[in-house]
Amino acid sequence: MNKDTDVLFISHGGGPMPLLGDLGHREMVDRLTELAATLSKPSAILLVSAHWEEAVPTITSGANPPLIYDYYGFPAEAYKIEYPCPGEPALAQQVYQALGQAGIPARLDDQRGFDHGLFVPLKLMYPAADIPCIQLSLVNSLDASAHLAVGKALQALNYGNLLVIGSGFSFHNMRAFFLEQTPDIQARNQAFEDWLERACGDTALQEPERAERLVHWERAPHARFCHPREEHLLPLHVCYGLANKPSDAHIAVRILGKQSGMFYWRC
Image 1: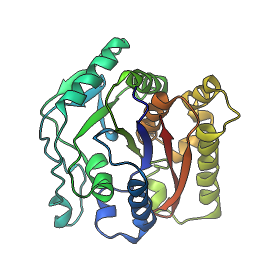
Image 2: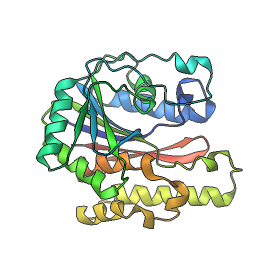
Image 3: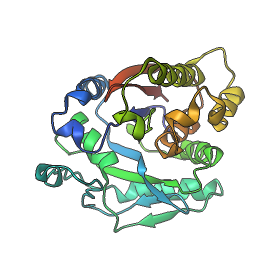
Image 4: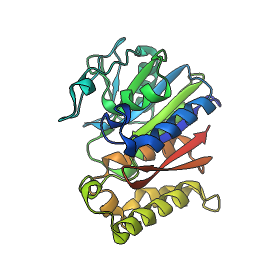
């Protein structure tokens, strides 16, 4: 892997709400805008979306993927959002080969478009839509160790000035977003966030121990309260599998009244 790869796990908020002026996403919008300003503008972006699951890791390989408005019940303007970034078939082929070389069956998909896990945060970070992008799916087994392995396989990529983004959410209990924000709910939310920050960033941990903690993330305090289903956490596993070191930065952000986190690695 080139030594000029940025790896970023983001909490991407609720559907298109960050683009619709929702006050509960103001901190998130500010943090993503600030992050983009601090990073070197990438040559291309590889994004792992929590909103795409396949039997094997699947990579968008079209030259100009359309947008997929994979959300429901929002105002008409949410379905008119544009983000006409190009695809990057050459990078898609590299990802496919890297996974194959690691013994991970994979698939290229030249028809699938970009879902809101990509176009919502990137419209905030890189509004010009002039950076080529590809998406990589999750594996529908939702096995944590499999996603660490996918990340490790991506270490073989040789693409200069690449930005890898895991687009998920460190807190994703949809029901809890609509409950009264009791001290108990806040404490459970914060306990998991504190655990995740230590798991990713504690420099006293050796990497095998860090990986073991992430594989067994369900043992964390209130893990299943924060993630009744883990698809929004697993993009983080891909990011860590690629970086294989403590995170260089943790960004705490409050989204829809919940503590959430983002993590950055320079590789």
